[in-house]
Image (cartoon, rainbow, N blue to C red; front, side):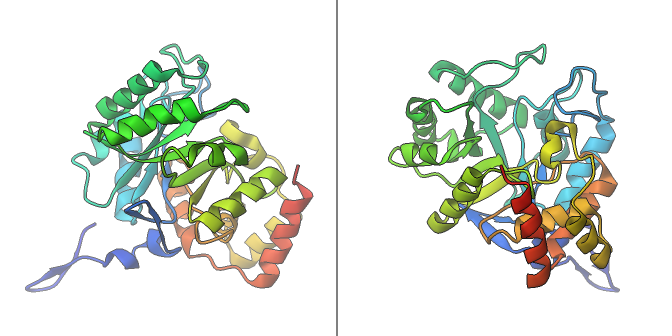
Length: 316
């Protein structure tokens, strides 16, 4: 970030004064991150994520967003090799924008069911495929090791064998820390005897969660594991993005604070516990600024009670 120049000196803002630091910090193993980060899913395209007809995003715009995010104090970027459009790859955009990576910047990726070159979704990855996916992320990001790798799963199948593959790659130095994505509470218990888990990344948002996900959020807090919601802004819209009418309570509190409902959703997410991280995804510079600004939004007990009631109303 450009410094403030005086006659004889140049100073740079302290890290804890940057907008992304306003919500505090959490640790992923031995890595310290600000609690608001950036999701890279929307960097490669505009419109619905993963849709074959979604137009690729302007390359220079995506790169500006990544660099601006770091200027704002974002030091946690969530990505995956399967975040791509016809002509853009999130990992390669991150590499182009941010390499050589500054100290303290944490890039989290995920492996498991992915997409083939045509964009079609694939089934669960076997042991050899998991290693290949890890190596693919290393190549695209231009790294010799990955900071955090989340094992993403589908359904309710046992995951110990697949997690064990990643644990072996951790022992080999290709991965620093391990996490889980799209899991249920028993999956977390299943793998903890194999290797430490530093984060759980699941679908969660105001009015768009399940009682089981609420349980997992609490369990992570009790064990000191980061809980990292995806689609926290989009809610029920998922990969299509936010849309549709918002609960009146959400609109009312947003009006009182003079912020958007998207910013309020992010702030509510961060208020769910000090272990909860937010990774709002965008490739739009204006949205990035607004998302990061939500880190400094403080909600009263009365406001939280109203929003919690709206959340429980939508609970499945």
